[in-house]
Length: 68
Image (cartoon, rainbow, N blue to C red):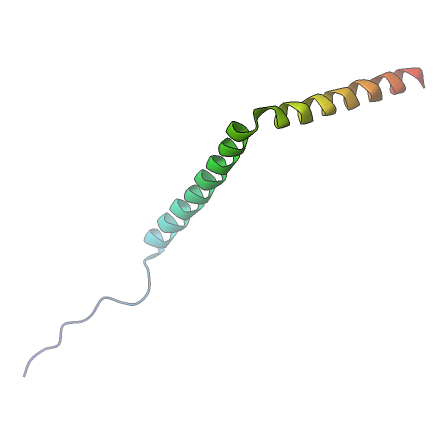
């Protein structure tokens, strides 16, 4: 009689699962940063204009707050 070798279990070890989840999360962050950097490289002045608009709004709000 031959003894059948036990096959590897179908479940993933907890440590291995956590490691895989962290690696997947880091890969998603990497892809997001690559996309963001590519957008900045393609149109570098669009982000700068948006930042200037925010600064102008902050300045006008500060002026209105001091007048009140």
